[in-house]
Each structure stands twice: as C-alpha cells, then as structure tokens.
Image (cartoon, rainbow, N blue to C red; front, top):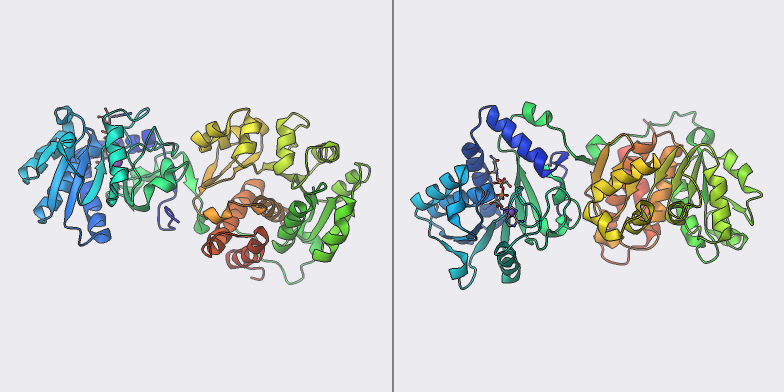
Length: 499
Ligand SMILES: NC(=O)C1=CN([C@@H]2O[C@H](COP(=O)(O)OP(=O)(O)OC[C@H]3O[C@@H](n4cnc5c(N)ncnc54)[C@H](O)[C@@H]3O)[C@@H](O)[C@H]2O)[C@@H](O)CC1
Ligand SMILES: [K+]
C-alpha cells in the first residue's frame, strides 16, 4: 500500500522545514542549481525505471523551482532521444533564478516549449512540474484546469517532489491535486505525502536525498517521525521464573446491551497480547457468552457502579469504552473509571462522554479516537480534523494531557510533550467494525506489561497496522478478531517472549 517502505527516512517535514533545509545546504556550499540538476537526474532515473519503453514525455511546468526540475528532466530526456515537449502553464516569463537557468538549458537541448493551452492532447508519460513545496492556498487557474486535464488523461503521471495541489504540510487537497502513479521526492519527506489524502495522490513513492550532507540534515527539526519496526521500543524478554502477576492485570469496562462483542474483542486482544490477567466488567446478559468464548478472562457482571470500584482498584490498567454506550449504565461506569488511579486507555463511548463533559480525563491516559470522536473532543468538525491530522492529534494530547492516538489512514500518536509519530502502514480493509476495540485492548496489554504510555501506543499502532496490512491483502471482509492471532505472531517476532 503506497507510500510505505522501511528504507525511507524517518523525519517528516513541513514545506517550511524543507525550504530551510534547502537554504542551509545551499549556504553550506551546494549551489541551488546543482541541487536542481541532482533532482532532475533522480526523477529521470525513476521515470526510466518505471516506464523504460515509453519513449515520450510531456512536462507540465509552472514557474517556480518545481518547474525548474521539470525543464531539466525534459533536457535529459531530449538528449536521450525521447520525444519531449514542455507545456508551459502560466507565463514562462515569470521563471527566475535557478528555474530560468533550467528553462535556458531545456531550450539549449532543443526541447520544444509551448503554451499548454495550444496542446490538443496530452501524450507520453506526463511529468507534473507545476507546483511543489512553494504552493500556497487553493490552486489557482490555469493550474487547476491543467491538473484536472492530467487526471482525466489516463496517461501515466510522475510527480516531481509532490503531486501538484497536495499540501506538503497536511496532505490536504488544495482545491484539486494531481493523482500520480509515481512521486519522486527530494531532500526530506514531506508530512503531506503520508497524511490526509496524500497516500491516494502520491502513487509509488521514491526518495532521493540529493547527496545532502547528513550532518546538515540531522540538524533540521522535523514536524513528525515515521514509525518503523527499527525504531520501535521492545517489550523485555520474560525471565524463565516469570509469573502472571508480573505482567499486569487489565480490566476492560464496556459492553452495554447490544454491544457486548466490542468489550469482548478488547479483552481477547489484551489476553493474546500478553497481559498477565484480564478481567471484563460488562452487562450480566453477556457473562455466559463471554465465558464460553474466553474462559481465561474473569468476566464480571456489573449492574450498577456498586461493584466496580473494587474491580478497578485490583487492576493495573483500565480499558474503558468499547461498547460502553452513552446511557446511564455507561455514564456511571465511566465516572468510576475516571476517579480510579492507574493507567487507562479510553476508546469509543468513553471518548464521546468525555467530549460531552460528563467526566474529567484521568491523569495517566491514552485516548484512541477515530476522526469523528476526535472532532467531538476538540469541538470542531470531522473535516477540520482531517484537514490537519497532525495538528488535531497534538491538540488532543495538549487538551487532555494524554497520549492521543488519532486513528485512520496514517494513524498519528501524539504526546503532551510534543512528540508526534505517524504510522504509514495499514490497509483500507481495516476500515471496519471492531478494529478499534482490538487496538484498545492491545495498547492496554502493552501498558500492563510495563511499557510507558507513548511507547505502548506506538508499538500497538504499528503491530495493529502490520497485521491489518497482512490480512487486508486477502481483500475486503477483514473481521477484527482475525487480526488477533496475527498481532500475536508479529509481537513475538518483534519482542520474543524468551531471550
Ligand atoms: N534549491 C531548492 O530550493 C530546490 C528546490 N527544488 C524544487 O523546488 C520546489 C520548490 O520551489 P519553489 O519554492 O520555487 O516553489 P514551487 O515551484 O513549488 O511553486 C512556486 C510557484 O507556484 C506559484 N503558486 C504558489 N501558490 C499557488 C497557487 N495556489 N496557485 C497557483 N500557483 C501558485 C507561485 O506563484 C510560484 O510561481 C520543490 O518542490 C522542488 O521541486 C529542487 O529543485 C531541489 C532544490
Ligand atoms: K509537482
């Protein structure tokens, strides 16, 4: 599922941060035009690898440095004997600096340059060199029209640096954005390639560092980091004399009438992820079925809050919310949880009730909202959350002084101290019921086994996404419970139980 590769760098930058990095590389002695030439070589290499027999390309060029890269790709292709043309969108007289030099180089190579409006039909591989990291605000005409034409052409599209129209900071479509088959991005990964609608616009993603000095790159602050197996924390191996009391007692609270399965899924997930003891506080009607399905779980009928404080006090970690409902039963159980000490993971209706002001967030909390729940928690619309998912995740972490897991494609984990990671793994088959319940139980189990909140959230998100990716390859109809044995295998591969 593009874009995703473990050999890509970890930092994710905003457009301003990448511009800063460019400026620092130039100040350190690599001329901007040299960087542009390296960018063009990288794009041309990727184009020939992907479409070796195409023989023809059309570059759609704007008038910034992104266009400069495009003019130099055209020059390289022309010199290699391909049939080439540049279609200038906007006024080439506006080209300046390195981009003007690139334009002159294309003319020297014999590349025909004409106004795009004179073009009857787009031909060959299309090279999108309209707008890069310099895009600001909604795409203006005639660029928007050129993007629509490219998308409707059915031709293969290579995007230079970022698909034109995609916001490098957020992955939001600024009006309209190119749907590329291949994107070659330079110097630093932009967060927008992985967030919002980015993964649906980028196609295959390739990265080229343009031989940037690693010393300079490592000094550049980033907006977020990608989660990969290589950087994830590990659960410690267990001593041979281990006993269940060392791996935490986790209590799932949820499962109102009609929603018993959600709490059961969380309990099953927690059990299979290695929590020492798992209890489930649920409606009396669900006890028999839960015990029949999961005899390892201590299933307690809770009719009112009378019994719950004792149960909660015996647990190290509470997972609250799956199937909780928002009626009196769920509200009263949540108020007991909110007053309990210890680590907690809140999901689903626990989040809706928190958003409604029914309870205050406890001190040691991981929140796992989907975008709709996040919107309710932040008092904004779901569209606003999705428009800048990184900002929404950080706002949640700040508002509730909690680790916030903003679910959905490109799940983000934010800590109140500003740490922010993005998981670029997963699969659209994961868009289904119960997947969140499994994640909540998993994260709770990692917490119960001694991981700190941020690490438990990161490892849980990654294992869940990898398992979903593996099973999603089989197609639609992924049942949440199918994920659980796969997560167990992945956890064992990542953090073996025995040293
Ligand atoms: N030295 C460097 O800085 C390097 C830059 N590189 C390339 O340069 C790009 C960044 O170049 P620039 O900063 O010149 O910016 P861009 O080329 O991305 O875009 C700037 C141009 O877009 C226009 N524009 C901005 N917002 C618009 C909107 N909403 N609708 C229509 N037009 C709009 C501006 O008027 C300007 O002409 C990178 O994405 C990358 O492709 C690479 O060549 C590597 C080196
Ligand atoms: K572009």
